Amino acid sequence: MKIALLGHGIVGSGVTSILEDGKIEGIEVAKILTKRKRDRKDERYTLDFDEIKNDPDIDTVVECMGGETPSYAYVKECLSKGKNVVSANKMLLARHPDLFETAERNGVCLLAEASTAGGIPWIKELGRISRNDEIVSVSGIFNGTCNYILSKIFEEGMSFREALTQAQENGYAESDPSDDLCGYDTRYKLVLSILYAFHKTVPYDKIPARGIEHLSDRAIEYGKQNGCVLKLIGSCFVREEKLQAYVLPCFIRQEDLFAKVNENNNIVNLQSKYLGSLSLIGQGAGSLPTGEAIIQDLLDLREGSAQSVRIAGSGQIDDGPEGVFYVISKAKSLERFIDQRIDEESFLSIRCPLKTILEELREEDFIALTA
Ligand SMILES: NC(=O)c1ccc[n+]([C@@H]2O[C@H](COP(=O)([O-])OP(=O)(O)OC[C@H]3O[C@@H](n4cnc5c(N)ncnc54)[C@H](OP(=O)(O)O)[C@@H]3O)[C@@H](O)[C@H]2O)c1
Image (cartoon, rainbow, N blue to C red; front, side, top):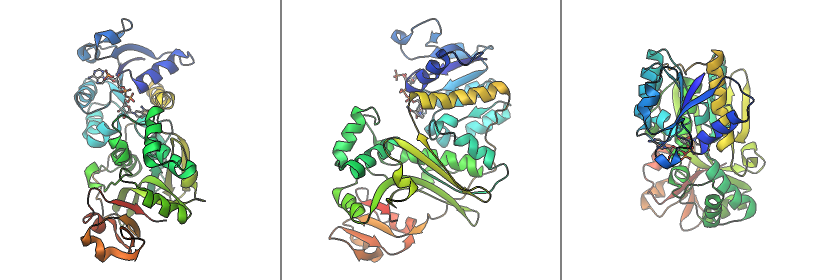
C-alpha cells in the first residue's frame, strides 16, 4: 500500500513515527506534501500536489494539513481520482459533508477516526454500533485544551489566565486558542459524532455553542460552593425524530464520571437501546494517539474492511434542551428568565429552552448548564 501525506506537522509526524517503529509492514509513505523547500528532508518530500494526485501508485492520501483551503480542493481531487482519503481535519469534514458523497460516487473511502476524540476509538465504533443498535445520544468532553484549563482551575485552584498560560507553555493550547475556548472545535467534533451515530448531516452553525472564554472567578466560586466542577460539553440527543444538540460549559457534580476526567483527556459517551451507557476515556489529541487513529484507518483500508459513513439525509436541529442555566450578564432583557438571583450580576434561570435564553445573551455574557 503506497500512501501520501498532505502535511507533516504534529499529526503527520505521528503517522511516520509509528510506521518507522517497524511493526507494520506493507504501508509505504511514498510522498509527503510540504509547503517550503527547507522542509524537504528526502526525495519523498514534494511541494507539488499534482505529483501526488497524478501518481497512479498512490492509492491512499492522508490529509493532515488542517484548514479548509487548499485542503477541501485537494481532498476532493484525490477522491475524484479514485484515491481513498484518511483525514484528521474535523473542521473540513464537519463543514463539508459533501466530501463523503464524493467518496461514495467514486467508489472510494473517506475515513475520519482521527478527526474526533483523537486516539479514542469512537468514530468507527459509532458506525459499528449504529448498524443494529439504536443510539439515542452522544456526548463528550471533546476538547483537551479546555479540559486542561478547567481541571487546573478546579483541581489546583489556578486562575483562568494562569491555566491558559500553562496550557500554552505545555503545547496544549495554540497561541490563538479561540477555536478551542469558544467551543467551535467541540462543535465540529459533535457534528461528526452526530454523522456517525445518526447518519445525518447537520449544518454546524445551527448547533448552539458557547465556550469558556468569558469564564470568571464568580462562576468558579459558584461551582465550588455547590460541589461541582465545570466542563465544556458537546451533546446531542434524539427527541421525537429531532436532534437536540448543544455545546456548553456544564456544571457537573464532583462524584460524576465526567467530573473525574481531568488534564487534557477526553471522554465520549453514547446511550443506546441495547448497550445502555458506554463511555470511553483517553487522549483526544497528540502526535502519537492521533497518528495511531490514522494508522488504524489505513489498516482497515489495507484489509478491505473500511467503509465510509452512510449518510441517510439531513438532521433537524431542535431548539436545544430545556434546563436551568447559570448566567452572568448585565442585560436587562434577561430579567424575565431569572428564577434565583445569586448576586448583582449572576442568576439561576427558570427552566427554559436553551434557544430562548441564548437569543438574549450578549457576546461577553457567560452561561452554563447547571447540574
Ligand atoms: N494536533 C493534534 O493533536 C490533532 C488531533 C486531532 C486532529 N488534528 C487535526 O489534524 C490536522 C493537522 O493538525 P496538526 O496539529 O498536525 O497541525 P500542524 O502541526 O500545524 O501540521 C500541519 C502541517 O501541514 C502543513 N501545511 C499546511 N498547509 C499546507 C499546504 N498548503 N501544503 C503543504 N503543507 C501544508 C503545515 O506547514 P506549516 O507549518 O509550514 O504551515 C504543517 O506542517 C488539523 O486538521 C487538526 O485539527 C490534530
